[in-house]
Image 1 (cartoon, rainbow, N blue to C red):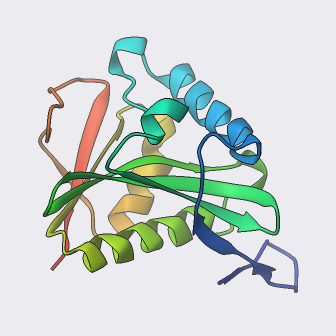
Image 2: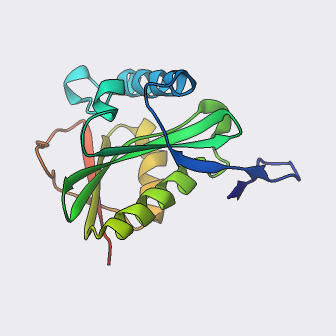
Image 3: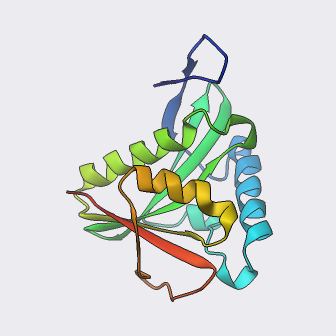
Length: 165
């Protein structure tokens, strides 16, 4: 897959692959993700997973890379055989707005379809800082919904879902 940076002619070759959240190459991006969430959300409303959570059973973790450089990441948690949850979507600051998040999200949607899920859900913040994420998800067919799985209604959190068919 190729992405393009604004004002550059050459495409960026990007590989999306299953990766190890414990790897040194991924550590900085995951720190950036957790710090970014903490800036905008009260601690009791943060549901982002750290490294150990991303290594848990039932989670597949991917990175988008240009060579050895990590551009972004995302994960898929199997809630049950028909329902998955998107976790830990993040684009590295220096690679925003070139299509990294869209590429990862499309990859996760394709994998959810391959697994036979009928529903894909996610949780994110309700603050204005999360508006770009809401817009991204809406472009891919996600709509706002009620809490799912073990989540509770929380004014600092929004939930979105997408039917797979």
